[in-house]
Length: 597
Image (cartoon, rainbow, N blue to C red; front, side):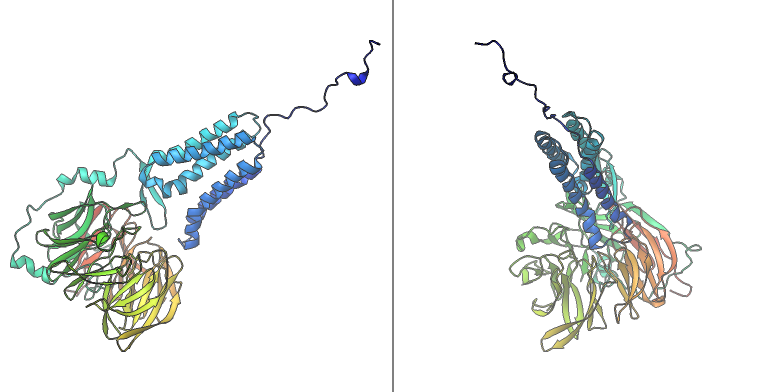
């Protein structure tokens, strides 16, 4: 046998090299995803006003971009399968843990709008920078960068979200305005124990100057008053200023008493303040706290004074009748039990309407429990009527087409109910599943304006009597007036109010725009019709005097009266202005024009 071995029998070295365990990452798609994410973040900041498309970009843009980063990592990055799975699992874990540890003001909108972009950007940028490093270490460092991005938002809280969704933040360990208020509550001026009821005290309560939300007719009109327009020579004079708890209630005013609602820790309170000094007269407390991420803590509705009685509705649905002289509770109903429902997203906001011995509120319950009426003396239910399941508008009493009606604007449209028994008198379908807040505005006794936000616009409907029913037809719908929670006023054929967050004027005959130009954020407005004046309280707490004219936007004067986000409706009784927000309340004396008593 030959000892020679053929070449074929000798194992030859392979020409193929083993595949590397790691490959450089394909990073250009990640660069595009990050650029898209931050480009979408700029859209709400650069937009002139907050419309529904802009808001959806602001909310959903970061989420969509983050999903694109995930798809890049899983499908296009060239990372090993194990590396991709570890990266994705770690990213989800980091996002979940940091969200759980974040302040409640950040956990919902904050983490979606801010934490998510920071965390996913950190993850993607680290991988872009380390894309050529062929080691599992690049994934661990990317997860560390994501932890830093997400984790920063565990250190802060959101103190304010404005109408345009811009935020004010602070470190979590810094006391909140509410904390500071509660710490200093003992120093708030007190007028002593609530005095016993006397005939002198009771007289103003029987004929309150400003009995509730937006005045006697819930229309924001203050007749018989003309303000001086030279605020440089005669600026508003501060009478008093106090700290208050959070809440978006306005004031009811009767004689020397102011009534409002606010949050004090775990208690929702109704407070009676002295109109001359701001001192506390009495406080009624209910163990209840409502909070949501945008509006924060506190009640939303405004107290109502009627026939010497005081009615209040808390954000969690506690309806009270109180003695306005002492704050003593006469009776209480829990709307969540009466209508078998939980508070709506932004809380119960219906300022009670009192008429014909009944107190009427929107509840939004199922099975005909949409609007409820209670006996003012006993608190017993008197009638119930079907309605939409949410609205932040209040029942509105007016005579329409010669028939007394309770008007309600809800997510289904407009309802007109018989005040005595809740019978449906008329209905106009105009569905909107966002949120409706502003009051229906009755014009000339036969037309009604319905305002809706987010590009849906304002609609004018004409109402005519047809036997016992009211027939309703659309006159026009204008997208030149889109009010959020900012009520408007009508004067001599024109409507003045907030189109998104810019003040504007439209023609009541056609809905056509006359002008738009007052940048006062999401504020509120009162009408002084005797001298064609508009008194605007801006979202920044500035008081602005405008001319109510359709020709152009004419600003006459302005003066700062509050600090911080101001959504509450202001009140004008005589020449006394009462203003508040979620931190402060103040009283100002406004100079009257020469010759005005």
